[in-house]
Image 1 (cartoon, rainbow, N blue to C red):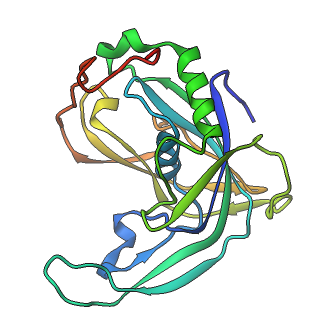
Image 2 (cartoon, rainbow, N blue to C red):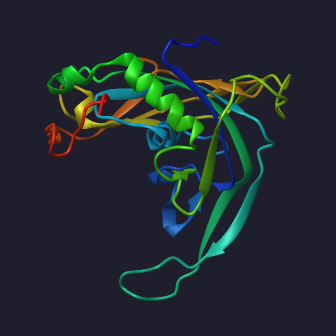
Length: 234
């Protein structure tokens, strides 16, 4: 497994997880994919450490525990009132090793002055050791997660020596307006394959991903030093 000089490695775990996308939430019900999506792991990594100067790339995930599901009857809050019962299908007792690295957000030339690789990498590693800078959620807010440092590939995993497992057509990630020159909001899909418990992700800019443009030419947020942005050195 290739590791970059600015890679971070961590294990994230929790009692429950729910990894889904809009198409799997019909009728107010939610059903989790069997594996975490690229976007969910990117969100977890951004909760550990994020600046608009960088873009996290998730290289791989290793599924450590047996994939198990549990159904629950949930009464969600409704703004219009009512007391409907919905059924959510969660993954339970999840644990994943994650390998990720960051790259510069080339669409943010206004933040070029903040491109200090050593500073960002050192802060990211310290943030992993502290369990993240923000709360960690496993796909949805009611699924609390916990982060600890690890060496990717170390320890015994349930699917070691298992071989290949194909998961079919699934959601991969979003490309946000500040990450592409056209400023489009894009959803991407793929067909993941797990080999001996490890899934190697296609990069978000891979031509192997199936893209769907959700909204075109969206506004990109401005970051102004001293107002809503500070340098890595600070």
